[in-house]
Amino acid sequence: DLFQQIEIQAAAKMLIDVNNLSANDLNYIKVKLDKMLLSESYTELCYAVFTLESPPPIMGSAIAGPKFDFNGKKAQHISSIATDMPDYISINSFASDGKGYV
Image (cartoon, rainbow, N blue to C red):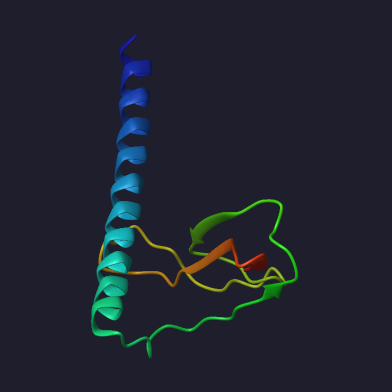
């Protein structure tokens, strides 16, 4: 019926808007990282590397904009404004030369 169609379209629009915000954020991050790579200047990048004695059983990569810290305290506000860029953290695990790295 008409009411259900309106609800479905509203939900679809919300998902599209959230997807567009995420794509915008990822594009911003990629451009920033590309500039660092091309200039070979990584001073704006904060990182920690953990070396494992053997390759991890599962390797992967992820990026997230956490809303809360490990203690459940609010870390940041994520808004729906395209120019309001949240802080992101990325995590990668991989193997090289028989060791693992996170």
